[in-house]
Image (cartoon, rainbow, N blue to C red; front, side, top):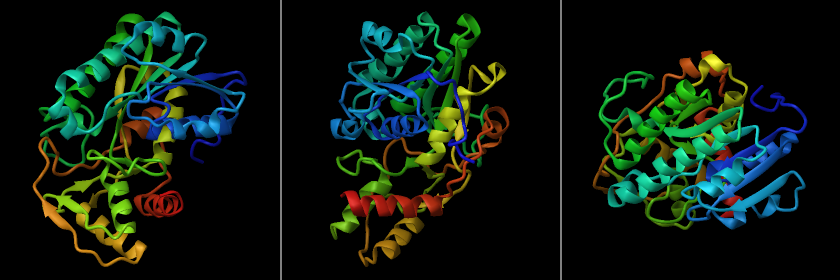
Length: 324
């Protein structure tokens, strides 16, 4: 069932980069709850210190405030580590269009620093965050590994390049790498604030505050929204995956398809609100429709997501009601 039954040797140590961010914080919490050691690395550029405060006094937790753009920091972070769960990156397609140079430095060079540091420290497995955005303008649904189109933003290009490095590091250097192509992850601790906030927490925050949300485009775009628990499972199962599964990328999603306007209606109902949205222009670089074929991850990683969109959105709403 899920990841709770996954077992590692008693003194196993994980490094979670981006450990003060949305996905990173949830990974840290899950691994500590399983009883293993965690070292977190974050420069707090997008992650938040309050996300890690609850772990600071845990004897199995260590935090390094540092930047993946600094190779020596990466070397220090990887020392004595069994598994690296590399989540540190800058997200957001629109922001990457505004800041392409920064995205190259953080997402590509930073990840390459981490892979090289992991190799030099004899890390067992390097699991890294990729993105469904690598599918670009490939129109077919569901999205399937090996059938990618032209990328549509600097962000998606950085993830495509990182996957190529992952393949090379497995082939050339024997570092087992596993790329996880996340599809629209949502859930507790996802930041609802700021211009580049993800759509679900942003809508929930605005509706709770009786504000009128803006939907980019006509609301008929569809996504494979994936609850955070499924992503935790994928990361931990990748750490247990066979060597033959290394050097590849995998779709990590639930395998569903939700239309944005339907989600908005569902949130109105769940929150007891009656607020009409504003329809704004479509966002540059956005993919219109996205849902995942997860058969490869099921077969190669034994990934078996248990959290449907319906179950996840109820849990997320309850969390935001208590924490906003």
